[in-house]
Length: 548
Image 1 (cartoon, rainbow, N blue to C red):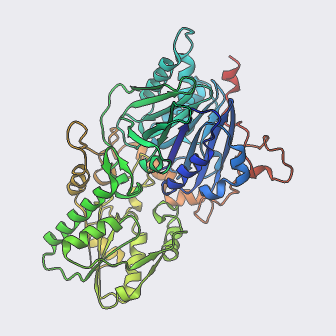
Image 2 (cartoon, helix red, strand yellow):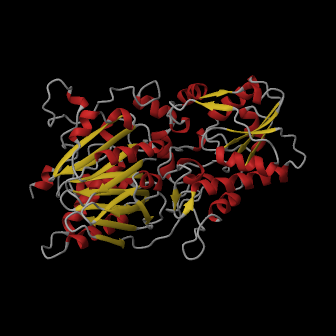
Image 3 (tube, rainbow, N blue to C red):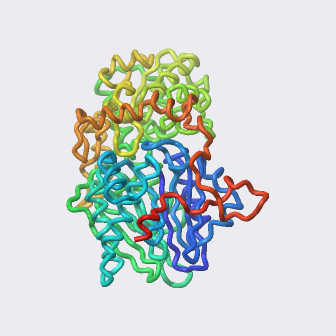
């Protein structure tokens, strides 16, 4: 899962660097592994990317160099490839025009695409990142679509996007910046990964445009939210004419956004596919409480306590429906990353105690209902239950606003293997025993779907279907859990494999974080170390293609 934001300002004398920084900052929850941005000034591209948080990657001297009225930014949480900063985005190829890509999601047919790009198209693939495939497929398709000198650029771009969506399978959303041409935003044919865009009046009387993973970035930048990009749609903003174009480019489409966005990943103040994430989480809490009362009508719950932060909204509504007090029993250290997206069980376990501390007076002698957004591997849940008992709780009950997660997610969320999931081949009683609580209760899948769809606008735009693959094992793109793809996924992306590949600490930083980064040739200040400045755009260049 990643966060992306792109901006095109109509006034060429204005810069996007600070707005990209602010947009990435409010999308930081979507990825804390790496950050990057590219800007363009008079067709000269400026790139900065590195492992780390937004506030650490972009220092003042970087921002001064990131000039231009158009740019793209990215925060990364790796599910494909590695944590090397060579795979931090945006990625770049010089042919044609100079194209950069920022991508959120995951392609499921990379094994088929890689040899085609490498051996048939003869474009260099320098990393294991599926984003690089997306970049090269679009670049090559644009070359072919633009080979007719009479063809218009707009038509060529949409033809190239049709080629991308025909060839690429999976859940993805992203944007291409074409140097001197404009900004292209797109979303996969099922709309699995989110993407919205907005506008505002420019200082020169024209229109400024923004695209982002979540509407919260558009709000923060004081743009007006226009709408979600539709499944299979591409939008193109021409940097020369300031004109906006859109087209459905996929041969067939269906709307099935990832329901886990509403459960966990998205910020509660975001709106996705017309649905308020906050309101959907209130509904999740309401339906969870109804199930508790249905299964345990004579429950002895004294107090409802959320596991901060995502579950707070659901816990608040659950407490209201149960008629029990809502209390804050855990205080969160906000300087620790989200434990679910930390690689390595040992790292996750250690981080729980660093991230949370209890207010003991809320636990002593009480029967506690803990509410979390979901239970994935169970590491966090087990530690939290023990913390509640250590703080004096008489009984500890655990509830999940999401159903049991029993299947891998293959669309950009790091749930790669069933064997690492606590609910795999376990019922609720067995899960309760495993995490050490008195009983555990999960949301029903039908209730989760209803909780989100009931918040959808009525009429033709009402959202009724979702990708629920990590709960149901039914994949929007047609994969079967018995496919060889899943066994390969387990081999490549289980925790042990990640630790062996990236370092024994399990944090993806076993190697120097500068490994694979491009040399810096556009920083002439001798007192600044090269790795700390903006980079020359040398990654992913295709000199063979450029020499045609």
